[in-house]
Length: 623
Image (cartoon, rainbow, N blue to C red; front, top):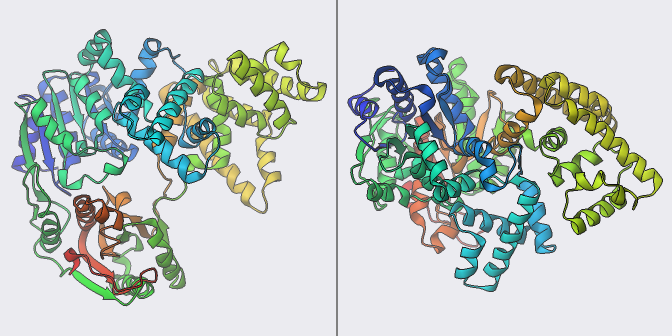
C-alpha cells in the first residue's frame, strides 16, 4: 500500500497522543495496520505491548489478515487486535478475583438478560421490557450505578428501573454471569478503583490504537484513558461526520474531551478519498457542511468527476421499488459479466422500507440479501448446544441449566423445575446446586427424581473430563450421548431437521479447529463462543445478490452502485429526529449512505406515501 503524505505522518508520529481524522474511504485501516508494523519493526515495540481495538469482529479480522501479510508470525506473537468487548473479557478473565467472580464466568446474551429483567419487572409487555433493558444498558454505558440513578431519578419510572437494575446486577453476580455491557463496564470500574491493577495493564499495553473513536460511549472512552494513562501513548482514529450511534450511547463529544484531556494531542486529517468520484463527494460534503464542526475537513478524490448523481422523484413507494429494481436489471444487462448483482445496494432509513423492495426483487427474479438476517448464533439449535458449553464452564448459570436440562426432552418439565427453583431461591443457591442436593431431590416424585439424576450423572461425567479432552472429540461425544441429531430430525418437518443438524456440524467443526489452533479445551472455548454470539450481529455469506440494508448497517461497506431511497422528510430525516431537534445525526447518517457509493449514486424520494395523508417533501439534500 502506497501512503500519501498525511498517512505517512500518521504512521510515523510518536510524539504523544494522536487523533487521526479519517474521512470516509480515506484508508484508515491501512494507516492502523502500517502503524502496527512501524511500531514493531522500526521502533522496537514488543508485539505483546501493542493493542489495536475495533468495534466489530469483521474489522478486527480484516486488520489481523492485513498484518499477517505484512509481518511473519515471529513478529506478531502476542499482538492484540480485537474488539473493545474482547479486550474487556481478557481483562476480566485475568482479574476476576478482584470483583468477586470466577475465571469461567458466563456471558449472557440479550435474550437471557431480557428474561431476567422481565421477571424482576413482574411481567410486562415487550415494548416496556425493551425500554427497561435499553435504559439499563445506557446507564451502564454511561458508567452510572443503580445508586447514581436513584439519586438523580426524575420520575417514578426511572426509580423503578433503577431498583430493577440493582436487582439485575445481584442476579448476574449470583449466576457468576455478566452481560454484554459489563464486559467493558466492569474492567473500567476496576481500573478506576484499583491502582495496582491499573498500573499492571498500563505497563503491559505500551501503545494503543483505537478505531472508530467517534462511536465510543463514556464507558469505552474511560477504559481507553485508563489503559493509556497520563502519557497517552495512543493513536485514535475517527470521523465526527460519521457518528451515527447516539441512540445506543455513543458520544461524539469524546473527540472534544480528548483535546481537553490531552492538550498536547496532535491532529492529522485524512481528506483524500480512495473510494468515490468527485461528484459523489461533492454531494456528501454539501450534506454535512450545515452541521456544526468539531474539526473542519473536506473530502476530495483523484478519480475524476464521474457519473452524474441522479435524483429521482417517484409517484409512491411501489413506483420507487419497481423503478429501482428496473434500473438494477438494466445496469446488470449492460454491464454483462463484469457487473455482479453484489455490486448493487439499496439503502434505507428504517427496516420497514425493505418489504416492498423484497417483493419487487422477487417479482423480477433478482437475488437479494437482506442485511440484519438471523445470526448463526441466534439459531435455536446453536443455542441448545451452547447452553451445554456454558453450563460446563459455569454451573451457576441458571439460564444455561434450564435450556440444557430440557433439551432434548428427558421427562424433566415445569413441575420438577418449579420445585427446584423454589428450593434454589429459598436457599440462595443455583439450580445446578439444588439438583445435587438430597433435600431438594426429596421434593420430587420417584420418576422425576430419576430423570433429573440421570441428567446430572451424565453431565457430571462429561464435566469431569472437559478440561482434559480435545474440544472436537468432546463435543461430538456429548452430542452423541444426548442423541441430539435424532432429536432434531424427529422434531422438525421435512428437511428442516437436516438443515439444523448441518448448522450444528458447522459449529462442532469450528470448535474442533479452534481448539486445535488455540490449544484450548471446551471450557476455555465457551467464553470465546459466548462473546462471538454477541459480536457477530448477523450471519451473511458472500453471495452474488443485491444488498438491502439500513443506513446504520451499511457503515464500513462500499458498493459500485448505491440507491439511497426514501430521501424525504419524515423518513430521512426521520420524524422522531425532526421532533427531537436531532437533524444533525440524520445528516451524518445520509453522509454515511452517500459515501458508500464508488461509481454511481441515485437518490429517490416519493411524492406521496400510503401512510401519509398529504404529499411528501423531498429531503433538501436530494432536491
